[in-house]
Image 1 (cartoon, each protein chain N blue to C red):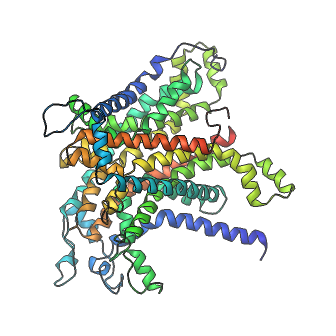
Image 2 (image 1 turned 90 degrees about the horizontal axis):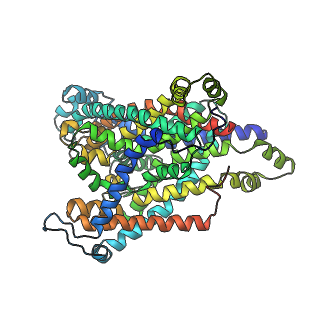
Image 3 (image 1 turned 45 degrees about the vertical axis):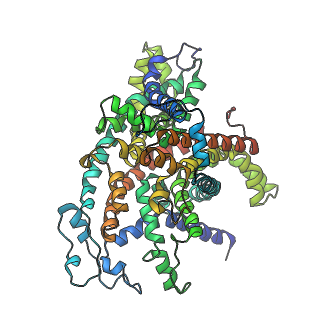
Length: 295
Length: 296
């Protein structure tokens, strides 16, 4: 009987293909990158001598490291909570009943499904300092007298890359939060209403505890995505103006493929991984939630 | 005004805001694609003084130079031959993404069933390892994956991209499919098993036919992710005629000589298949997951 299965041996013939494909392309590359980060691997120099933590020292002492680290951390600390908050708001709206709900629900995942280059272009079209539509609209309705240099002002550019990145990520958060919110027992709300609980109290004491686990998962996920994100920001500002929006992830790429110093590139990558682990532990400490327990 | 009416109005307003926030960049791009460049660059801005035009679309498909670029003294940008790679890029992306869809279903459905219905030692551990695998930063894996593909002799082939994209999508496919398989009434599987079906026969004769729409829709989800993947498509892609759409679009967006109208037209063309997929995926995958959680 399917429904009364006893513990059985490992069903290797069912799971082997997927494990083979996924782990072959995950474990070997991770091991290879770790090895590279501990050796001098430069295309221009012969041999690959062991250098211990030398590559890490190079990276930490480089001129870009501190700026890129600060930018990456700021980018992540703003975009991850913003993504979850917008996702929560959108999920609440999409669960309500209104005409045209299917259309709005479908359109909402569009930002998540678009290629990064297209996303960057769409936002450039809005924020372009000379012919972006935002300046045009603000000028027409009389809010500004002269064009605002959105992408050429360092502070505004930092803000805009966060907006553009968050735009690509909130749909996924909204979908998972809709599933979580849909699972909350409606009778609890009825009971709370009869006890005279306000809207905020109902959210704080009924909804939040039940969706807390998914919020923590989404925060962790978005922090990891934020720390490694590069495509939208790179296509939008290429790190500029100056070094206002350079991220650590650009430097993985730049060290490896334009300076051809694969040792340093892998060292940057593992610094990003360490940073991810640090954030992960901090979030799980600050917001303990029974993620892996029973439902 | 009564309180319920006010609530209604606030809800419609919120729904409109969500729609506007998600769709307006795309709609603006559509608008930009049918305006001649001299309208876009005009100052003080007046976008509609030159009417609308479909020349940009005609250029992408036929190579016919838009008539507005012949106007003497018109403010115009260069046009870029790269825009003509858009239809080819869409075709390449579609072929790769279809391969990813097939491989995801073939390799993803059996383990999803095992995770949904079998009890075995190490199940939790295997599942967690599979779900955590895609969280390793892809940029860090670029070089070793390139070397592996080179060693396999697959550099510049579509097979390489299908394989690598499947690595990125399979964990999600297995996760979603096991949610769907769990919702099939277990009594049906019991009945077949009592009638003497083996485990594998239960899977191929009962479970697969019953969940065919969900399986196909989950495959489309993998299709969608593959269709928009950029990094590996760039480094493993090879020569120009093999480029997938995101690579073509990135090259186009960094080309400062390209006409804005043309760029908008290419962008909008590139969005259309995604838009169609998004509707199907939402209808069959996302609604399925949400309903599953409500009942579960």
